Image (cartoon, rainbow, N blue to C red; front, side, top):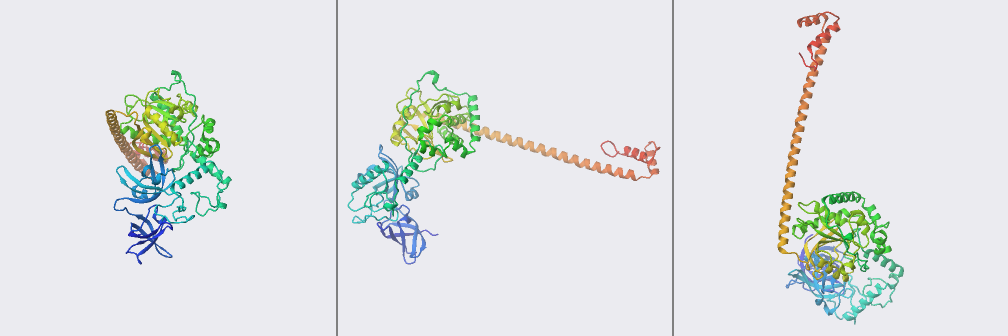
Length: 610
């Protein structure tokens, strides 16, 4: 279907439809609706590309894309994907802006019209253009349940909804009042109040066409909240869908801190033999994890999923009851993803371990899956020392100790915030697998800042893109994200404990040399294996040919022997005696005796002719 170009002849934002003028279309005008814009905002005179479909009322546009204006900016409809109140910035998402820029759009709260406080999920209209660091937004306006910026000011509609699903702003409502009403309504939801609002309710999030009788009653609302509780409950080891919802649970209650005596300090190193045993354990786990559904059911303590368990009894109660026998049903996927992430860090010179083993903190260690990943990765490197692993988990410490044979602290997130790591030697790497999406966003900054003061590199494994980690938390992205089987591996370097640049370059050089040597050895081993295979194949072919030749000779001799037997049997008595006499053999006896005597003379033991 051909892509055409035209200009917006007219567009009514209130009703959500308009016309495109295009000389190549019969009649010149093409009808379009707001939903045909897929998140773009159109106004009269905008240049637009589209395809044409047929409708009962004539040509209609589809796959519309509004092209940038002369200043390079474009207007979009979307929503607030994330917002950091501390930094006063966040990201906006829209199908249209993603189509244009390929990523989310950065915005600053200072650019939001009327000083309205934005929240995640808020519907917005904004302009965006490519900046130095990517797409940046300007003229951001919260739509207060979706009202477009270019809706006529004198619109008096009190209940109309645009075709894109954005209700028109009620007459007389100022932005500040609308924001207050929206916040009050959200507070009502959080308090669990029923949705049976009066007919003149000013709620800004009622769905189009919903009458009071059709709204959710208390029972449905309770079910909805329970379902949200399941989705927002904590440590989602069952690989949920890669959505952008926010998992929130309160910070863990402070656990009793371990006294740091030599007896309960983690072992500061593992031998290659220990690593090999751990590798065997990981291989056994990998085989067991093939039955993923059964494992997930077992890991969830009899519930269909961990999310269901969290929703039913809560994360704290679940781990208190099942922490001892906890297992990650997707352990092998996590280990493979961690290996890829650590390799990226190694290539960048951010992890070394060539002279001294890596000092690793496994935070929220579970039953040891991340620690196994580190040991397996190290064991596969050239000239790498065994890692020193410190593990911590306030719930699954018994499962870790039983499986790994190593000590495990009961440190919680709160312990980390309170400074439990300050007395520990600095860690080269902290691994947080399937746990950093649990704390509330307001709790992330003190937690990550404490980790940044104690650790040089952070590796986050998560079933989705959360948490969003920004420089104000003390970390910056170190290497590109690794996505392996829906597990996101993101690596950061500490701004509080920056690595020496010369040391990083030297480590990267050593890693490159080791990698080249490993590749060379692998190539040589492959070539040697190929040569050995070729030699073996040639030997096998020679042996097969010799066997075939021997079989052919044996067949010839056998055929000759059989022919001699037949000839001898057919000889008359006188002929037999003459043949025996010629050979100086005894000619006395019966015919059969003479025939046997002659045949023995003519044929040796292996059947060949004399």
